Amino acid sequence: MQNVQEVFNKIREMKKEQKDLRDMYKDALVQTDEYEEIVEKIKELREKKKAIETRIQAQLGRSYEKLEDLKLEVDSQKEMLNDIAISTLMKGETVVAKDEFDNVYEPVWKVNFKKTNLGKTVE
Image (cartoon, rainbow, N blue to C red):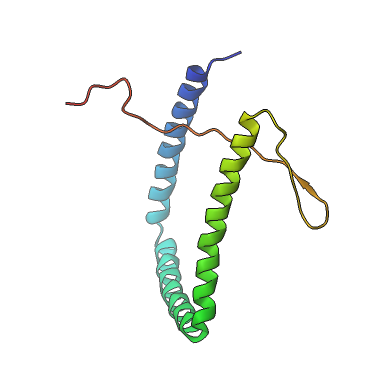
């Protein structure tokens, strides 16, 4: 079985190759006249779309504000749910939830790595 460092290094190599190929692809697209025209049309349409959305948001007033508040509250509740699930797992208990139709939900655990300054000297 490979260790964490070997797999981590392989992923970094593949991501670098992926980035190089993506850059090559983008360069090829930029050199195509038709592509540039379409990109400009898309930009114009996005601006029109944004203007319409802004107008409708203003028309809805308080209802739209409530929608935005609910989005924030849902995110907050999801974070709390994650914290509770991890605490429950750490106690050695099973983590499940049920909806109103008795469908059972179990958590999906995910590990991410982020760069730290550990092991480096900072001057």
